[in-house]
Image 1: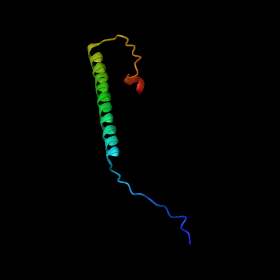
Image 2: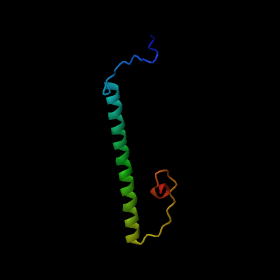
Image 3: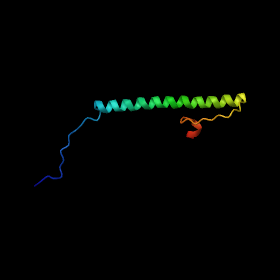
Image 4: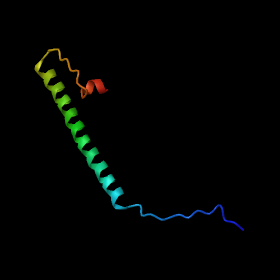
Length: 72
């Protein structure tokens, strides 16, 4: 009788050091990006409120990649 369907599995710990480092790096990177986008959004909202209150009617040409109006 042969056992050709059996596999020899080596059990590996899910929380090894490399996986833990990758998870921490992923979380830190996303937190930094979230803060950057938060402050960019707050700056855009602040400028919109300021320009509407002060009656500024200057034409703003913003061709940058982080322009929130272009993103939405």
